Length: 281
Image (cartoon, rainbow, N blue to C red; front, side, top):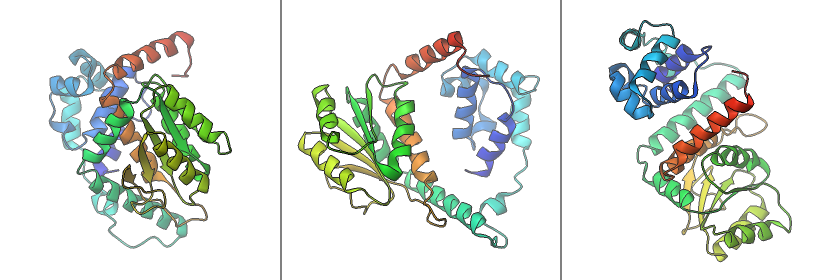
């Protein structure tokens, strides 16, 4: 996360925001370098909300209006930039070193995303699949489950495959019968043999495979697949997967761009969640 994004998150922290206001905040974090220079109309268009919503957002943060918020953003100090760039003495304990290694992995991911073509292509493949199987076994199961949870809010038929066994192939076949044309796989070290076998089965069934792995040279790599690499951290007893998790969210965003009713589905969920008082907010 860049310094500008981090300072924006600190600004938003502790405020109770409506769903529309959260979309504005999310948009500003994504466009952190541009945020201080956007007009309220431009920000509203980028976030997909009304211009009055931007004004109410600024007031919710404690400002008189959006111009006051924009002045504050322009005046926000740029301290800690050297620290974020890794300046100063290297921290001496293993926990700090693990965190810094993950920051490096995120920087590498940001550099990779300078060309968004592979992620956009993957997003279109997933969005076009009437049924969407999401595969992730063992260490990758958390990534698969997290993606499937959010994807189900915008995609009509998401099928989580996070358990191995003889029925795994059956569940892939069931997805194909339901119209699936693509499968998303999360593959992180150590790679289960069942993952490799399931991917071979999926390709044999005619599915296009999109894989998020820790390396372009992972054992699950296949020339016919769309492979999106994001490194894992290896400084602790168990690998850390901040970059694969963030890449999964980026891929979700790309998939939403290919689903014309994604925003309507999200708004419908927000309305039903409010009616049922699902969240304490």
